[in-house]
Length: 162
Image 1 (cartoon, one colour):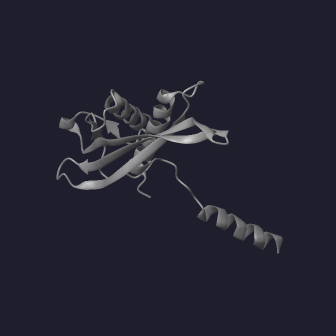
Image 2 (cartoon, rainbow, N blue to C red):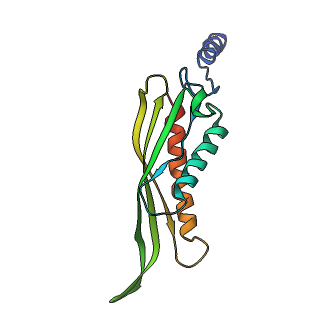
Image 3 (tube, one colour):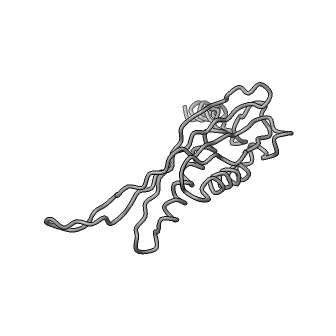
């Protein structure tokens, strides 16, 4: 009986195999990423978002970042909105003040093939960060957190075809 159990257990192990060789991005090998458009009044944000997404795709290593002439795909983006709103208050009675703020960055991103300009996907992707006017978590840190969230979502969306 023990031998029979061991036999079926070994067969079961052989049937369960996993591969972590990278995501399936089809026949797309190279992507060009033009600098995102910025429809907000936030200076320098388009360069920062574009740069962070580009670096994350390079680190991911499923697609090679290249120029438009040799690209199989384009990642085209717009920063459409930036919201800065109170997040947490402190105080008591009739006296309250804002303790923390939440900054949200909204983007519209299109991943398309170069050959026929067919969209692989197009989506509104946002990210947010929290900051305080005092302390180490300032507005720039909040923006960094928001961009990091957007970057992770974009890379996951680009390479997860499963």
